[in-house]
Amino acid sequence: MGQLEVEFTGSREGSGPVTLGQANVLEWIGAQEQERSDILCRFVPVPEGIGLEDVRESLVVLLARHESLRTTVQPGPRAVQTVARSGTLVAEIHEGDSEPALRERIAGTRFDFGRDLPLRVAISTRDGVPHVVALALSHLAADFASMELLAGQFGRMLADPAARSAGAVSVQPLDQAEHESQPPARRRAESALRFWETQLRRMPQAMFSHPPLGPAGCREGYLKSRAAGLVLPSLVARTGVSHSTVLLAMAATLLAVRTGNPLGALVSICGNRFRPGMTSYVGTIAQDALVPFELGSSTVDDVVRGVRLATMNAYRYSQFDARRLWPVMDAVADERGTRFQRDCVFNDVGAHQEDRVADSAAPDLVEVTAALADTGFQWLPASSYPVACYFTVIRAGRDVELALYGDTRYLPEAGIEAFLRGVEALVVASAEGPVPVADVAALTGIRPVERGAGWVYRDACWVEVAAVQRLLDDVVSGPARVFDHDGEVVAYVAEPVTPRELHLRCLAALPGRYTTVAPNRYVVVSRAPLDLTDRAAWTAQPVVAAGTGRSAGIA
Image (cartoon, rainbow, N blue to C red):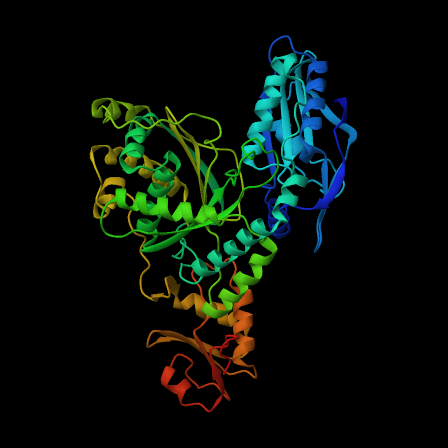
């Protein structure tokens, strides 16, 4: 292994509070254990005739131009970002390394974001000549759109020495943090928390609340469809929404059909680049947008338009202080006895890379049908996300390219491929006109999952009563039994404990349990009946305490 030392100098140094985006990343990095989704990696091919000195010069400019690449972050209650004016980046040089080998070298271990530069670089050479440069960035320094901007700028600088100039100073993370500290931005962040609270009170805690369909594991599939690419421009024109929204709505429709959720919710990653000057921003600014949706009973076109309204509203409220969102989520969880699981995520990573057209002309159905034969599916390299379903739009131009990551307990391998092909089928079927929601299952092959006996629909959530029993068994040591009676899930417990303490124990154990909610009521009795399955026998026991256990109505 060789090394390339890159000495850089920027226009300023400084420190200040972290941005909302950085604070958001700090929150979920802290919650992760094994996932590597906090590191982004891109490969930039090196043009013919370009040597290591060109790579060095281009990296010097990149580091000088973007303060996020020379920023360290000290976490804590008042996290601080510090920009270094100058320093040295050491890039690794490896002869003949493949892209997967380069990725493992620079993205296989976490960043120490309080000490390390948030950028790692590895160069693969052939006979000593660079042919590909791998860039790995901490998510604290860049989101996906920023990574694409950096890779594009670096590629242009490699190809053209005239482009190797830092240029005018643009908005940097320190500037963004200052903007976010101003009263108008603070008011918007407060409004975002209120929006989340409102939605969390009414939506299902998880879309994939159903029996497991396969063993634990994860896979990610990829589908490329020319047929969908031929149809999509006309759907955009007909419905008056973006390419991204059409595909999001198609996926949401299939999710609702498959999971049997008439009211659904998912997270869409919002780029938050609406403000002037932010399109070229390099830093982490993307955050979750909470998108509720309803399947309805009319047509998929109506679902698309409904999702458009929902996303427009959600994207307005996708910049918030993640540290303050947790207390909001905890308060709603206490009240409802549910815990938002964030099991479904949507991300359009192609919007920053391509021109997407709308066309009111109807597609040639013969050409569309012929193009279906060219649809390709393959499995992507292993990845890991703390979700059940991660649907990604990679391209939505001439071809539609989609990826679907699935937790194989809820989306087995066959289900992942079927879902991607189902999205394609729904897009293609919509070419001839609005598709009735009632016809979606037959057209796509995506049918409602079977839950069987012992399931109830309560407060917009599918609940497995046996799973609530398992939850209760895990948090108490004495005899306990759960019954679904008169529209309530009631827990009977023979243990010296208060309803409030029982509720808090249940809430603490909810994360990761998609099929479970906390009981609506807790009844503590002095002793358990002989037959624990006999509800009448439980109700005949002397009651020590009873109540919802909620903080607003402890009884």
